[in-house]
Length: 117
Image: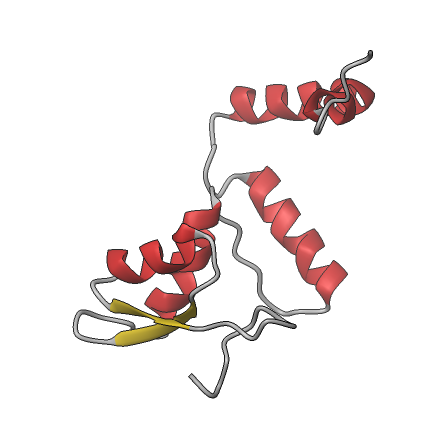
């Protein structure tokens, strides 16, 4: 019996290896890993693609979740509601801002927060 791989992350890399390796080499050679020309180009392309005026990229999903909370001024003593059926990072970033996550039951058909809870 042949093993079925869950997700072959290497397949996409192998298909794009030449372009990916060249891009990484350019970033390393430029030595500007944050806010360098490649990041500026990516953000400009994302703005054009989404039709938005601004775009801010970040290094990981935790930062992506935390940045809006910081922009909204979430601070210690605040309560932020999150669905009880969620990935832990959704509540982790609330705690990182000093606020308190409040878990709300989810609607069984949408998994969104249940307004009746």
